[in-house]
Length: 118
Image (cartoon, rainbow, N blue to C red; front, side, top):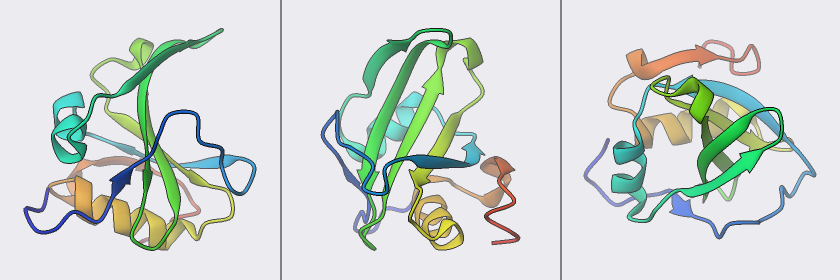
């Protein structure tokens, strides 16, 4: 993670997706401590029927794009799924977030075909 000025800002819980929904674009090998350390705030926690307990944080990128990192208890130790607003440009938002939050591209465990080779 970079030490320079942070470009991702946490969002209040309950914010709506501007495009009405999201797309899952990547799985990132980062920990709760990585996420809370970057944003300087606690993760939001909840429980989703059929999927179980989760923890997440919403964010706004410098570009204005809205995204979320979410991790389900059933996937403990497997990092966070990156969701972005359905109307966002997947490759550019992915690059904006990954360059800020993960130490190297080797921490990207999976990426959607929407990302391409970004």
